[in-house]
Image (spheres, rainbow, N blue to C red):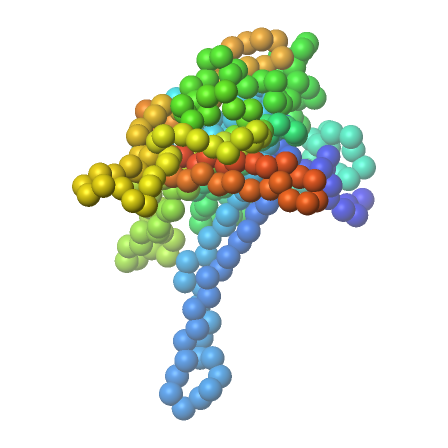
Length: 314
């Protein structure tokens, strides 16, 4: 009997033949990139060419003790961004019957496979309310109806005491935070980067033969702070009446590293190391309006080409 709908239990996604556990959403966008050709003497379109069709896949997952999507794309190899620039992945999205509790109990009703996909962006969010999440976007040029997808595990890891990671799983004692955040109460941490890939073509071939990264890769980390006073930090202040040849720019480089543990107390389950070249880009003070909201300060730091993600999950 054909499906009447697709909902969360009837589809799943794999990266390099491994099911993404804790997946929250998956989106596939296909763009045919049409280019119109006209001719003299007629107003109608002469031809409508698809010059470089591409597919974009975005997967969001909860951090749950299983491998990160980034790890699956990397084959569980710990490399920085530069070393991972040319890695490609195969992604399969499968749909099962809408009257089954688990996908894969019967044959998938439909599957699409995207091959030769490059990671194009990463985003990690660690909020004070809600689950810790990872979102990865892939881009590629090949999409076909093939393959099969299996069911994810029923529980987070470790199996006995596993839970999805939340605010208590940030290891403040071993993480390395900027000096401006000393003594501050954090309400959110976000890490994001985009590879800004561009296509390379060659005569005799329709699809791009490569998608290169536009270096340098900018990595941004933001910290939301529950404010209890107006921020006073010597590295972020300046005076419009500075003396001649004197400057303050707040550009001192700092080391930032975020360590996460799981409910079993396994230290360094996931480690996000942005290296020692992080510079403060902006400080934003907002909120505290008459609606009753609290004031939040947001500190944004940037670095380039430096993000090493250690995944000690299974």
